[in-house]
Amino acid sequence: HSVDVDDESLYFEPEKENVVFASAQDGWAFGIRQFADTFAQKLNCNQSVLMKTLWGDFYYNPSTKKIMKGAHAKNKKPLFVQFVLESLWAVYNSVYDGDTEKAEKIATSLKVKVLPRVLK
Figure 1 (cartoon, rainbow, N blue to C red):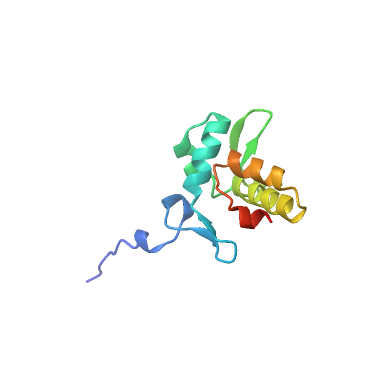
Figure 2 (figure 1 turned 30 degrees about the vertical axis):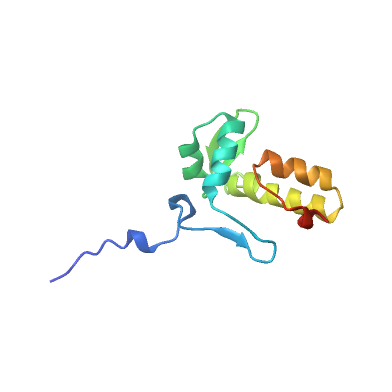
């Protein structure tokens, strides 16, 4: 006898909200829902669409204002890089450059609380 086992729940996939990205050293963590919520409002698109496309081979085309498939084939940055990583890098760069005003502005636009000790 063979038994079919549903092992779907065993896999980690950010869009299933079973993955958290974190920095223990800097004291932050997030799932992709936080960024999907923020960018859905900014891009005037459906949050559930962003949840499915933030992690995968998709990119945002600013001229058409649409999420497109095939980031890798078209040599485009994936949505996760465009929206999540570049936002994080912008905050870190502004902190390292001593531009606390810029860091606070970026964090506020992302609805992220940055502790004052981090900005020093």
